[in-house]
Amino acid sequence: MTTASRSVRLATVLRWPLGLALVSWQYMWRTTPLHRSEEEGSIADLPEHWDTDDDPDGRRQGLAAGVGPLLHRVYTVRIGHSTMSPATLMEAVAASLNRVSPEMAVFRKTCGADGPLRHGDEYLVRMPGPWDGPVRVVGRDATSFQLATLRGHLEAGQIKFRAAQDGDELRFEIESWARAGDRLSHLLYNRLRLAKEIQLNMWTHFCVRTAALAGGRPRGGVTIHTRRLDWPPTVASPASADVDRHDPIRQDASSFDFVFTPAIRPVLRLVGVSPVTAGVDLTPTHVLIRFGWWRISLQRSNIRTATVTGPFRPWKALGPRLSLADKGLTLGTNSDRAVCL
Image 1 (cartoon, rainbow, N blue to C red):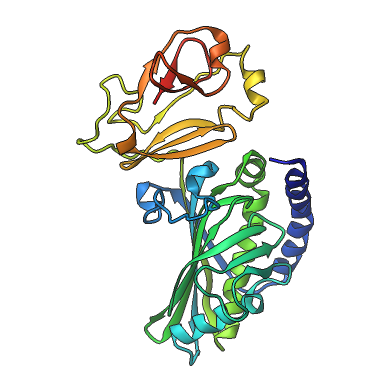
Image 2 (cartoon, rainbow, N blue to C red):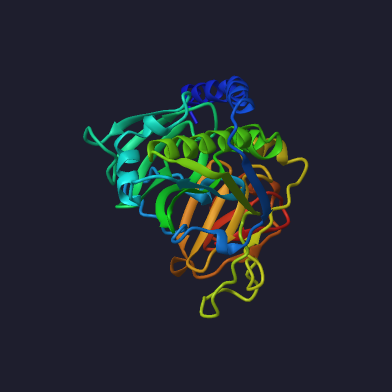
């Protein structure tokens, strides 16, 4: 990460306390009731094709590139007394995102033709929270659209906006799948919970303003349901996968745990490698490598084995290295045990 990009990200983070104060002041005087719930998640919370996202230019910042747990959230508002159809409502939202976004959130189109939101358009979302960053429209139909985070965003994941008819009411929902984009965001989002509250307030506001755009009123307030899934998700590997019997990524596990030698840990931190940023994760189709600043996704079919190697000399544990002896890429954080792909 360059000094300039770090400065931009730091400036964004420093706006969060001000944003939280202003948003909190607004919500102190809001009469719309909020119904919040949170529970443990499962692999069922992963979005479809999350590990095979279409990424023609390599700029998408998918879930595998994030830090910390996955938060799967659904914001729901039921709208009464509206004469709009779901398609008409979503057409109105897509025509002017800033009409329903909070006052402090601004959608600025950076790629795409003028006019309503279209598939492939890109926006820079300016707001005092984790949604301050670049996004791309990756899905659009008559009653929904979906955005995905791009490189440099403070979160990693995607978010979907949709409307549906529910009896005599309209139902508008925002569904998000997101992890913190880096360690600093992880601290503010999952440890201090500052960014998490800003995000909740912002998208709740979006729901309320969408109800107003529909010409109706929220019935029963806004419901926010959160499911939290620790990362990496535990996904059983397929029986047909060609994995060595000494594979550290076993049938009953989904990751290789790195053990950090105290003497080596400070050196690895210089290149961004820490217990939070290091891991080799398995899905049925891919092997996802996180090692400090490196983020690599490889198809399982391209990897013959994943084996434990070691011991070796301490200097060889200082980051990833190509090993002729092991005939593969070795990742280690101590001189006793590493994983070779």
